[in-house]
Image 1 (cartoon, helix red, strand yellow):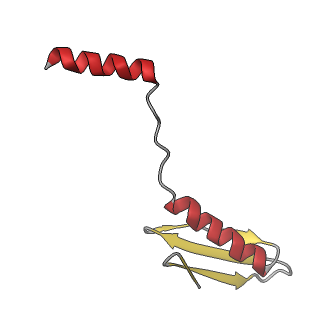
Image 2 (cartoon, rainbow, N blue to C red):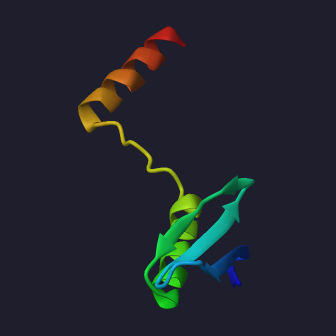
Length: 76
């Protein structure tokens, strides 16, 4: 199956009520299990979304920002 241009597989486990999913994002294999097929598809797609999500940017507080700007203005 494919989601956001990333291939992933969903297979039924040997035990009853076990579905296994494995996407591979940027060479890293993510694995998991779910109770039914639809949950496995949802979990695999969420894992792909998490892997592709951009890292959160930490914002500099305004007071610290002014200090940084002032410090660089003095050194230049």
